[in-house]
Amino acid sequence: MKRMMFLLALLLLVSTFAFAQAPGAAAASAKDWAKPIAAAVAITVAAGLCGLGQGKAVSGAAEGIARNPSAAGAIRAAMLLGLVLIESLTLYAMVIAFIILFT
Image (cartoon, rainbow, N blue to C red; front, top):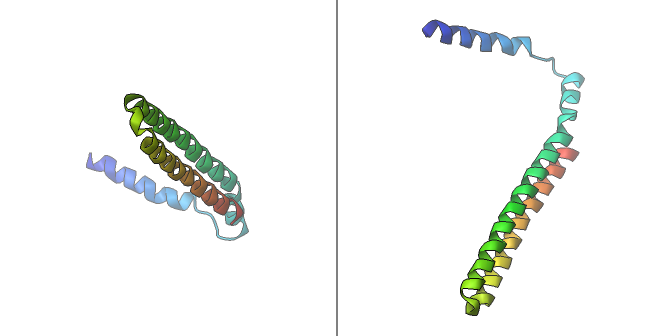
């Protein structure tokens, strides 16, 4: 077991030098292809999870109003506040995606 761990550590140490790249124009252009992908993944995950969260919030509010119709105003106000906060998280992700994309 110790021998296997030693070989693994040696392999990790040697592989860093094998995949090293000289700094300069080649290193800067190598990251350029990943920026649009990173921005797209960030906004896609944020929008998808935002949709799930908003669906769960609306579902819970509808169930609450169905159980207690007299509290509909308070439930609706809390739901709208929650929806605004959930949507703001997606907008923050969009701003971060733009920062990733245009820097």
